[in-house]
Image 1 (cartoon, rainbow, N blue to C red):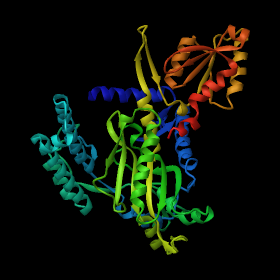
Image 2 (spheres, one colour):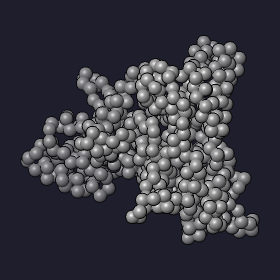
Image 3 (cartoon, one colour):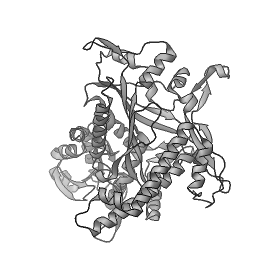
Image 4 (cartoon, helix red, strand yellow):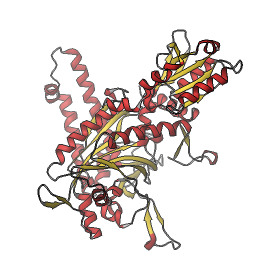
Length: 513
């Protein structure tokens, strides 16, 4: 099973390059580790995902507005947020393979394997017993109880060592768990050390510490420092949210798994400001809303799950992830956090400026609490691409590779394909394209046999192909082909637009949420 998943992932990565979705950055110079460029189809898919998120936030909620804050920020911003002092990952190396790992992720890997063992035991028991009580089985089965005990003990030790900054204790936990390097197979580890993840540079003509600034490691702080600007100019009343899409940068020591973990990435974040004491109500509200947003894409509700954080960040009083079943297993796709009033209070302290809200209904000033939703755009892209990639065996014995991308997100909505490059067919095809191109992104192609062109459009994920033939010249009808079913239908040119619109409309997708 693991090999099948590895092969699938490799096929997705290869397909992404071959069909213009993602290229290794600076490839002619042998590339740059964990940095990628989005190609012509990838950039369209990426922009469509952005549109789906942005419209959900700013059109469907009359109390959420969007901003676009600068990447460069005053360096004190990152002192106030805690990134200068605490934005570190615990790392260690295997002396034999020379590979570097995050120590906490090695421990979490052991926990995941124990959880998988529990699920396997539960599945076996569920098949044996007709009236199966899951909770009772987990609490009474000896083997499962032992697994759960080890999970709890390991979680507690991990949480404590991270909270205390006890790197020696974290290494001892790795030793006690007998964790081996997956490459060398040895347990010959270095000590655990902390690495700060921020990129720094200098602003101005003199390169010294006084001019040192950072590439932002997250987009949220641009929202917090603009809290009052937006609130006052927009006459916003609590509760309200500020949304932003933007680049962030982290000097990830261990960056791998294609675009899942990169050093330059893009975030789609919304900070929702609420009255203190009401944050948990809104935390649950946004958990439900964000899960619905993901599942509305129709790529399988079973591919999503919530995962509560056991080790909360210093600013949070509740946190969970929406995990997606990527080719390498369930991993974080989006984080939902109740950040309390930490950020605004800290910026108020470091800036000396009041960042409070006057509540006219209660006639009082207070620093709002914040509920955050943050989804990685690149991870979202990977979830759509990987889940859409299908290798199919057709009834005639042939094979096809198709990207069944949700139609509203597809890079091209329709391909215009004249059957031949003569007899007036290209001219008629361009006439039809001119009718559609103001409403849909169209792709025109006249090279190769029509079957080959269909396959190329399948591989790109184009929902519809329109074929123009000699009959088109006679009666103004065309053949429209559906990507997913491969069904072909003869229709009048006058109804083509409405057929496509019903399927690919972003508005119709948003109405389902």
